[in-house]
Image (cartoon, rainbow, N blue to C red; front, side, top):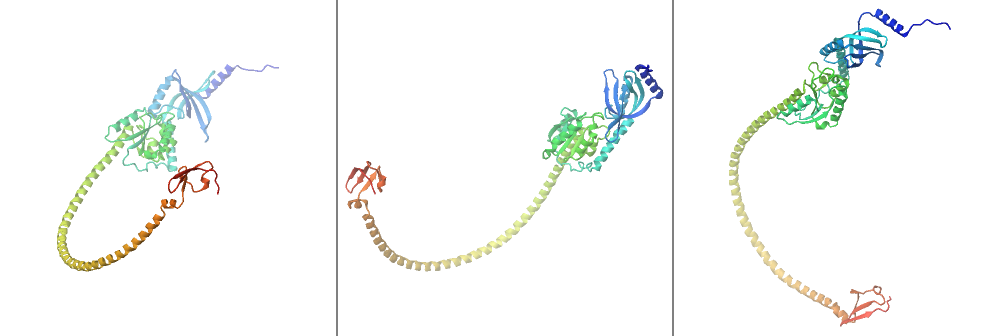
Amino acid sequence: MAATKHISLSKLQSLIKRSLEAALPLPCWITAEISEIKVNYSGHCYLELVEKGGDNGIPCAKASAVIWRNRYGMVSSYFRSETGSELAAGMNVLVKVSVSYHELYGLSLVVSDIDPLYTLGDLERERQKTIARLQEEGVYDMNRGLPFPGVPQRIAVVSSRNAAGYQDFMNELGRSPFRFRVELFDAVMQGHGTEDSVIAALGRICERLDDFDAVIIIRGGGSQSDLAAFDSYRLSCHVAQFPLPVVTGIGHDKDRSIADLVAAVALKTPTAVAGFLVDAMEAVDSWLVAARGDILALAVGVLEQESRNLREAGYRLARTSSGLTRSVDMRLERLLAGISRASHQCLSARSYRLEGLAGSIRGRSSVLLGANRAKLESLTQLVESRDPAKILALGFAVVRSGGRAVTDAAQVSPGGLLEIRLHRGEVAARVEKTGK
C-alpha cells in the first residue's frame, strides 16, 4: 500500500487558526441571546450565545463566548447602570466580539463591549407586545374598571414575609388611627420563582373573595431584572382579570411595570400604598363627620318645625275639645233623663211579671216534688231487693278460690281449696272433680 500524504492534528489546528484570523482580522458586532452565563472564581465571565430561528424557538446557531476579567467589570457595570439589570440568561444583546481559535479549546468569541441600548429596546419591544396582547384579549382595563371599595379595611397582601417593604407597609398602617384587618399571602417577590409564586398567592385569595375588599401586591425596590416578572404576560393577565381591585407598590423608581398598568391603583412604594389606604379611610371618616353634621342640622330643623306644628295642633285641639265637651255634657244630661224614665217603667213591668212567675213556680214545684218522691221510693225498694245479704238468704252462696270469685268450673282443678260464703257463716271445701 502506497504511503498517503498527511499532517498532524496540531498543524491542522494551526492552519484553521491562521485561516480564521486572516478571514476575520477585526472585531464585529453581532446580535444573539444569552442562553447561559457564569462568572468563575477568577473573574472571567463565560457565556453561551444562541440564535433562535422560526416559531419553535430551536437554536439555529450557537457559540461559546468569554469576557475576560479585565473587561468584565467595566462592561457589566456600564450595562447595569444603563438598563438597571444585570446580564442574565434570556436577554437579547448586541455584543462586540473577536473570533478566537485555540488548538485545545476550539472556537470561541471574545467579547469586548456590549451595547445596552439594544437590550433596552428589546425589553421595551417585549413590553409593548405584552401590552398589545392584553388589549387584544380585552382584559387590559378589566381590573382598573372595578369600583374601589369605599371602606377598604379587609386587605389581602401578596408579599414576602421578611421583605422590608412589607414591614414598612404594616408599620405605616399601624401608625394610623384606623383598624385594618390584614392577611399576608406569602410569596417570592424577586428572582426566577416570582411569577409562579405571585400567581399561586392570587389563586389562594380568589378562593376567599368574600373575605376581602382589595388585594395589595408590594415589595421593596430592586433592579430591573429583579422586577422583570411583573412585566410577564401570565402575571399581568392574572392581575388584570382579578375580581377584586388590585393595588400595586412594587418599588419601581423609573418606568411602571405592566402589572402596574393593569392594576386598579399603582403606587411607587409599599409605604405609599399604606398611605393610600389611610387616606381612603380618612376620606370616609371626613364624610361621616360631615354627614353627622348634616343629619344633626336636619334633625334640629325637623324637630323645631314639628314642635311648632304640635303647639298649633294643641291650640286647635283645646278649642275643639271644649266645644265637644259642652255638646257631650248636654247630650249626656238628655240621655240620663231618658234612661231614668225608661228604667222606672221597665222595673214596674218586670215587678208585675216576677210576681206572676213566683206563683207559677210554687205550684209547679209542689207537683214535681211529689212525682220525684214516689219515683225515689220505688228505686229504694229495687235497691233493697238486690242486697247481697237477701240474695244469700235465699240459698245462694259466694264461692272464692285464692281470694277471687269463682264463676266457671274451669277456674278450679281437683284438689283445690274453696271458700264458700253462706247467708250465715263460711265453709271451706276441697274440689274432688270438675265438669261442665
